[in-house]
Length: 167
Image (tube, rainbow, N blue to C red; front, side, top):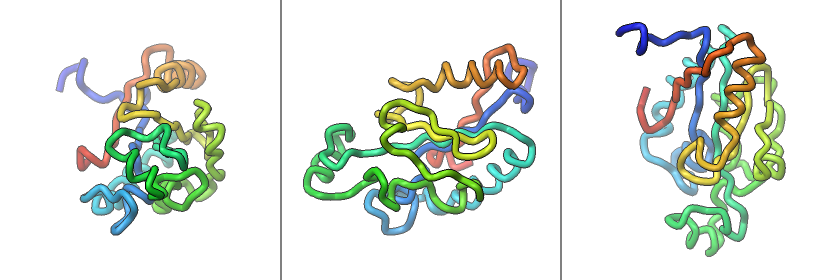
């Protein structure tokens, strides 16, 4: 690793992607195979980040009951009544083991309107309307603002923790 690729843990943040009950728990409405198995490792990493004051951002999906904001691959199921990550449902919530102990309840209306919600110290939740966390979200500006707020005047280095890369 050289100076350009070596992680700088004084200027990083961790993202979790779609680690919600409906995607992560065995037998859930839209279970993504393999996710449940990596949750314990994710939890260990998040606990280390919390103890070292490394910011954490949970990026989530929320599907309106009518399916109007759902991906095409899931829209028909939702229109047929499948309640996948429906606002206010248990399925839309973060998996309990990765949530901070003092987490605030999610405000789904604000999240759907683009608010990045603080749920605990140095921990937030962001709704993403499509597959990418940066697509039509305020993620980049949020990290620039938070990086400056915490004394980092350079771009914040993102360490993306996704269930898909099986860290």
